[in-house]
Image (cartoon, rainbow, N blue to C red; front, side):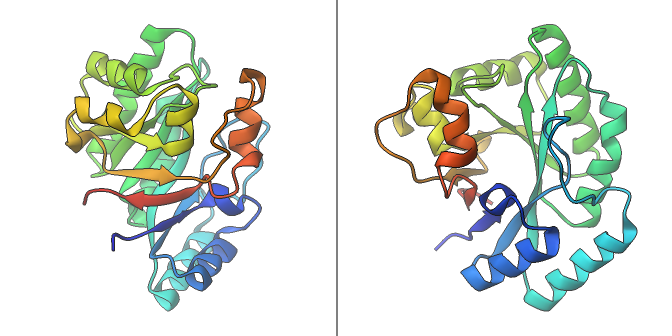
Length: 222
């Protein structure tokens, strides 16, 4: 049985300590911790820049035997400053996370590629793997688009995060993964949702509130 990590989005209102405790009760092996607000309007419990909270997280992890699997979610936009994101990468290192989840919402493909390249370089020197997630309501909408962006960027160490819901809603299928190097896919998101997709205008709301297990993660390779 491969290890399972409870993503923060599954219980989005939980603070980091409550998230760890929920994962312990649920029998998970790890948690994915949200330490960067994806959008300016999103509100999260501060972790970056709060040494007291970081100590509490470490202590609760030690008590439960769980670990931080990945941190999220960096959405690269036109306003993104990769240098300003480095403290979040440092916290990921301090918490011994293996991965950082990244998504693209910058319509300028050249700028998005440049920022992704800078972020991958900053993560790589810290020993963290960037996992680029495609979402039908982002600027990187499909598996093929994510693969193409990584080819343009040519990072030393990055992969693609496949969410079963986003794969389905972008018109893809599990068979599509066979076209690509398996080393790209370190782990995936497992979700439950209706087999019939919603209308296109409701894809984002479904992903953010209509699929109750959309944050459950199952590592595919270690």
